[in-house]
Amino acid sequence: MTRQDLFNQLANHIIAAHLPHPTRVAIDGVDAAGKTTLADELVAPIESRGREVIRASIDRFHRPRAERYARGADSPEGYYYDSFDYAALRAALLDPLGPNDTRAYRRRVFDYRADAPVHDPTRVAAADAILLFDGVFLLRPELAACWDYCIFVHVEFEVALERALARDAKMFGSAENARARYMNRYIPGQRIYLQAVQPQRLADVIVDNNDSTEPRFLFKE
Image 1: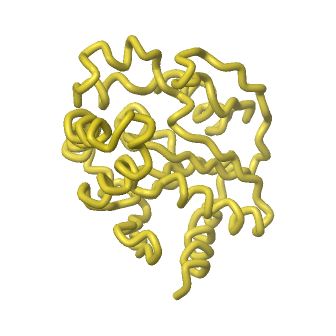
Image 2: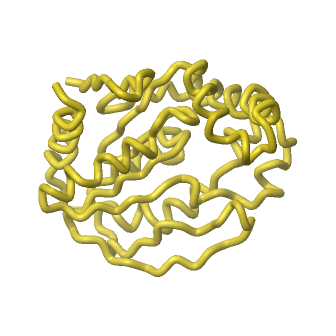
């Protein structure tokens, strides 16, 4: 089966849900698993089936820097518990697209690079729109009930770290700095999540993305 066939198959699974409101799809996984790439690659096959796609990410729902790092820049607990504003995410995006709501949504509320709120115009989704939302920690209890379809992108931590260093070395000033941040904060924070929530048990499909050129899809029965 070709890569295009796999994504067409996944698109068919997503649109198979006939709901009276937009379908909210979580694309979860550890840092640098390939969540954003997968979400972007799903847009075309879903749109080709006549469905409106809303793309959004947890990166637009950070909390202010002072709150994110209140436990220290290297705190795994700070990463897991303090990074994102789940109340704002629900109020702006997930709840409006859910049952018996207005479908009037915003895709972002905060710019973490500027450490400031942002104004995002309110849009109104089609009743059969598909939200493709990527990010970390998406199946935690605060959000679990908000998703209509859940994808978990699995990679081993060694693979994720290698990708993260290639991606984030410049942002952190060097590969050494990036490695230290991942080893001290991000990977241990992800372990807290994986142990507490066990997101692979909750997912409708698991994508093994250790080889990003040939991902493998495991659909739940």
